Image (cartoon, rainbow, N blue to C red; front, side):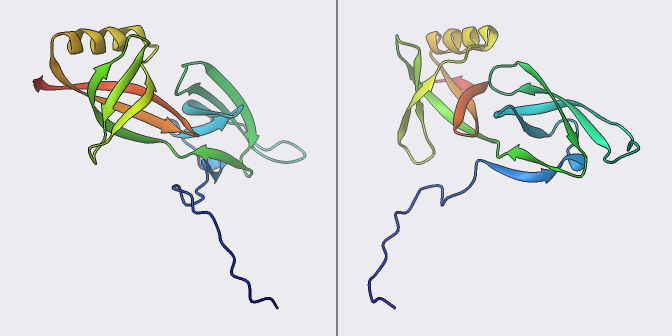
Length: 159
């Protein structure tokens, strides 16, 4: 055996996976699932009975949580599906730059400048109008599988 010390680089996410396995038969409407490498919210689940040779199948209809596209998948109910770790974090809006990026204030007082304005027109106008009026705005950022997007807005009153 060698007496050398091994150095390991530490990662901020402690090597946590972007997804976790869950049996297809236990995923319900309103839950999340990965279809075609995209994080999706399940809007419909139907389960077929077992056939002559085999497994009951789950038919998932889901909507991509970032771009709103409808995706479908059929998986045997006894098999595992990938389920994304989805988290929502609230940040206070500090500034909107001309190139469409927002500057957000994190819990610990740092700024987060790597997020673009949302593509949803209704939310986009709410954010721009509220910011122009000088309101204190808090945006909810949804993140899953290394992607982040502003998904909601709260008005916490005038500055």
